Length: 150
Image 1 (cartoon, rainbow, N blue to C red):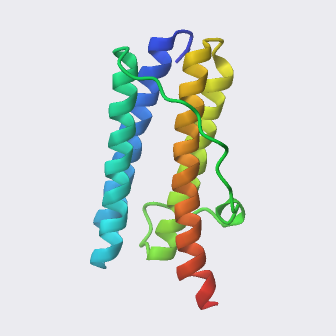
Image 2: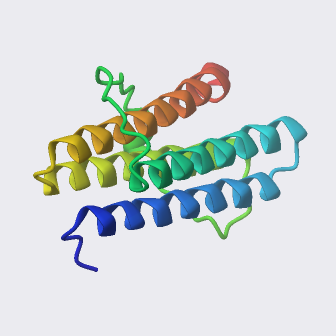
């Protein structure tokens, strides 16, 4: 798919946010503990919120301002990838989530770099920062739950 227009970029971003919401709902359905289900359902809701923001942007109703860069603990960067089809425990689900958020951050960063539209670049950078916040939250959770036990 060639992303050569603002509309195509926004459509692609909307599609990716819907995919992310479905990903988190799938993770939630695979968890055996209620608090784990709740965490991932909450992220699905946030991704749907991102989708709604992008749809509003597409309609010309909203543009986002990029905040300062979000801290990256880089915990998930060096962990071995986990297969979504495998039996997942909470640690593995967190690894999947960290890697998904890193990929989403990279997507928005790449899309921002690919456009010359200043407002769209600012909005895509803001969305990248939202994904970086998600990754950071998963990294903190991983640090608190997994690394503190070792």
